Image (cartoon, rainbow over all chains, first blue to last red; front, side, top):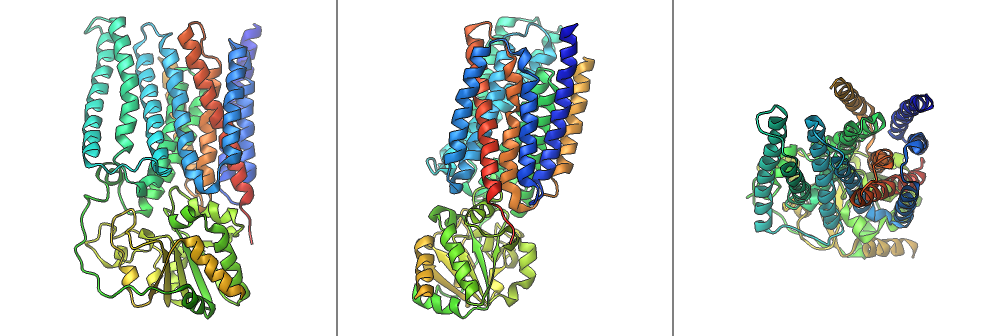
Length: 465
Length: 90
């Protein structure tokens, strides 16, 4: 009787924690309430764990694992540099998937016959495993430890994907057929197939992400984020635990929304991103007229100094150079000089959704100064100077001017329409899309070569003299 | 079987709810949303707490599942909080 009562309390606890998750996420999607939303959602998590305590079978193991994981997670969270957030989120997505993977693996040992349970176990293992290994590759690519791009590897990966799909389909059919009595149920064979599924799910994640280029990482991270939630939801069905299902689905949905926003911001379909890539999706043959006009920091200062309105457009180059603080300093000096300063942020600038916003927030730039392309483009003609800091594809005018370009149709920041464009760049290498950028050859463009942080520091020094 | 249908029903509703909840998020919050959602996906912790630890392998699996889920929960909420405290208005 006591047991039953506690089950009711537990279910009510899960319902309440689901409400907290939902409310927390809602608050998290508005700037003013976001910080409190995160707190509300963490309260939901605490409650869900609290009402599960009575079910713990092995307290020593549980406590030591929580302490270990909590310690590792907290150290990560407090030490990580804001420029490395994409790597960290990628890795954490993977851990979420891995946890579901282990969970389903452990549950498999309790299964005897029910075929539906077995199918759900397979699903959880596969999604969890793919999320884990895919995230590890994304992590390695983001931290530039693994570049990819090997043609043989890419081809092999795509073939492997086809092979693993076929294998998984056969394994699923085997379960269905044996439960319908068409073939006899042989637990030993099923155990062997399960071990194969464990391995294949890990390899599938590798094969899925290896061929995807670094520039598409914002989409990949979003998708892996979504998958980590779906894995948790699937584990929830396996354990008949409503808290896992609801929380997992919320994460799955939010990741999916971000994935679609990112794909739309690049004007590409998910199929194109995941299975085709930029390289093979068309080549631009158009000749670019005009010449590159390099500019020294001293001359750049004169241009910037006389400007009455400026638009700063940061990209991944700002993150690499860790230049967000000097960029903010430059912005402040320009404002003191009577210039109106705003920031143009493209949704896919950087390596994860909203990457630039976090960096500029770290440097104390107010978020209402950050404008999206649709807000700033109509006013672009009145901008005296657009300062592009390590961004490339998101300001490429081919997207609006040249139908044969692979990035044609992608919404960009139309800085080429500003009176002057100053581009800070390390070299003339093209962006991740591998597409030449005619912006650099335009009449109103000036190139300031060098490390973004050094170049801006020089400008700042000139201002102070 | 009915219980699975019921769970599936919850699953579908929760997905639609999630899509509605998130659809109007400003791009400033994309990164915190993702890391906050990431922390929520650590909910597998709740499932992992009650895993069987009968055999040695199950003990190892449960330990790993709890550890990785805890990394997600603690790391995810803390880093999201750290980020959100930096956001400020003019």
